[in-house]
Length: 77
Image (cartoon, rainbow, N blue to C red):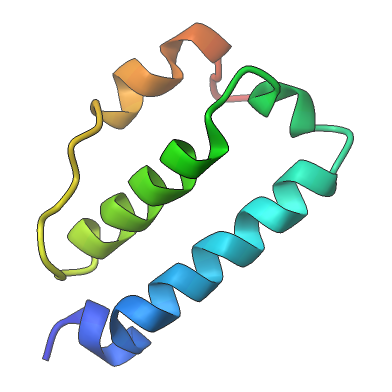
């Protein structure tokens, strides 16, 4: 059994990602990162990514995480 299946499958991944972005968009310390984002696309890509890395079906069509986040200058502190 994959981690994806143990977590509850697509319904569980969808629910967690949607709740995650609800919190992110309501948090003034990070919500500015998403002002120019297509949130429908962002949420779907995150669902696809989490599904992929937990052993579910590979529907991820986004860029790799390093490339996707390079413009934000995220680093180790």
